[in-house]
Image (cartoon, rainbow, N blue to C red; front, side):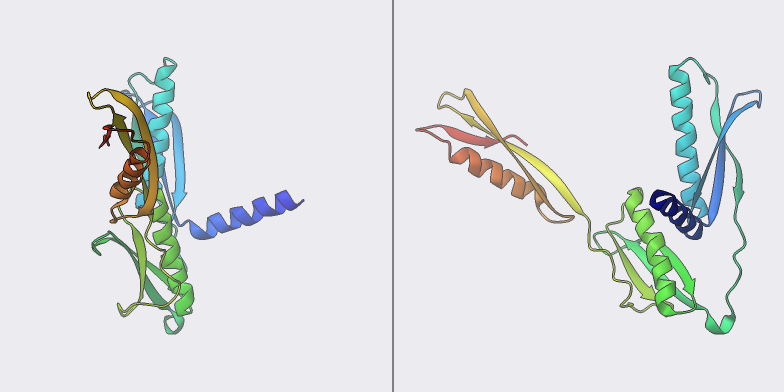
Length: 219
């Protein structure tokens, strides 16, 4: 019973979040349609991106099995449901920007609601969804209100982190390889994550030096 209730709530949440749908169809050069792939998302661009990807994956799988050898993906339809407008006296707008490390705006998302919090919550959801897709080279979401000023709610998501790995190797005085030491470090985008990983790898190698042995960073 709990599982069924969770599925119902998830379905309702998905419908309320998504707004646009897009369909891509697998066709051959004669116009015959094999199968269609429809995806629903918060706007047309995201829905079509997901549908196109699903269609191309289906062609790739089919070709590995000897099917769809001359097929291609073609956008079939895009449906944009009309949203009932809110009364003009109660409509509030809020904008969330997807920005890069240097503060440049990659893409902007606008939300509407009867309160400032409701509008900003919607625009933040749109931005965070695009950020989670990892296709727009954005590093964080910054929310502002309808007048273009920073807005205190909802709070922007902190910058994403990146992980780097580095290896240091130990050699004897004649230059022959002895051993390697690998370290991994995670930190925010824009910081010297690679350098910190290499520093740790070098230190680990250095502690194992005997006599005239040396350590070298090898990436």
